[in-house]
Length: 307
Ligand code: NDP
Image (cartoon, rainbow, N blue to C red; front, side, top):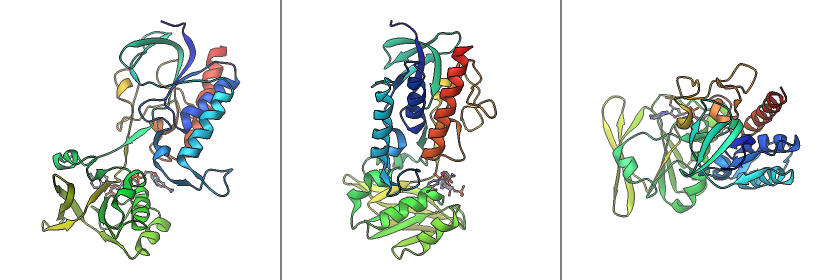
């Protein structure tokens, strides 16, 4: 086993990379494990137009690549691998990578982000990757000139529906309430797009398909009546859950599973553990807020190590 590292960062989105930039510039020689989705959720988006400093916008993968290179420039040790177990009972913490390699860490910055939620229908699981997707910007291209559906009524659903509408023939939005939850501007964009049809008060009873993949969906209205739509793609946009399974028995989490931190700080319930980004933030979930909380975690971590 190698010497205990001073700072181990888990996760490679804006929070993780920003923490790596700050801790490497503070000479703390951070080690960052990228996890199963290097670059995090932003690598699945196209244009990012609201990250300050990019007046003409930047693509999600490009932004993540720049953050990664910035961290590497100051000596951050960025490694491929997924943390499969952590033991936070005593410091240095024991961490297992890919089920085999062990590493010790004096402090831990958790920046594992959040993952898309699914409805939980067996038919949805069956056709995952064969028409069922939780990322329109990743997979929308495969459904050019076809009919698709997006489930959800939040900003993500509206954004994904708008994106798909630019590629597909028709986009149904399946919304369980009689109204959308998204911001007024996003709602207007949806209502102004002629090839988006919003189906209010509809739930998905079943995703339909055959050996070729998804062919339709059986919808149930809130009044109990049913309706079938013919679609080739079924996109989920119903929110995310935090990636905290690794820590569930060891750290205080809120009812939704997000890491609880001391208010105004990034400090988790175990000394020496800090949380940054979407894994601790169910509200804002922006690249810029994740980056800011990565900075806060790095500064908290640095102060902790100086003590
Ligand atoms: P939200 O939690 O805001 O919305 C989730 C949507 O999915 C809601 O309409 C919800 O319905 C619906 N939903 C949840 N579970 C189910 C289910 N089992 N069956 C059917 N529908 C379901 O998540 P988002 O991912 O849209 O947004 C998360 C945060 O990120 C928000 O704060 C949002 O504003 C922000 N965001 C901002 C963007 C921007 O500014 N450009 C872009 C994307 C996200 P119900 O309303 O009935 O609960």
